[in-house]
Length: 124
Image (cartoon, rainbow, N blue to C red):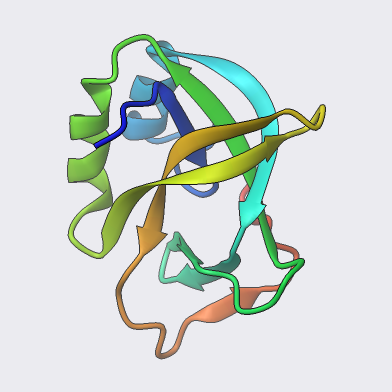
């Protein structure tokens, strides 16, 4: 598996959110700023759920963290749980730079989930 020190976050792990995993992540990472990736965003309970795009132009907006230690991904995997799969995807940073970053793709059921048309997690 390809190694990357970049992690794209789009929901509860975004910088500044008041939960222990967000605080843990950002205490061990550099903020590379805003970014976007192809996908659709849903609200599943209290959490954001990124799924693959079905048409061109569907984007999910978030932030990219450069991890000081990629071992932190193991902690983030536990936090995300079994309904999310960590995958390496193309992201475009705010300045137009393209990178490959890990992100958590939702693999659970979307029944009852609400689509967030803007692709932006509402808890900003």
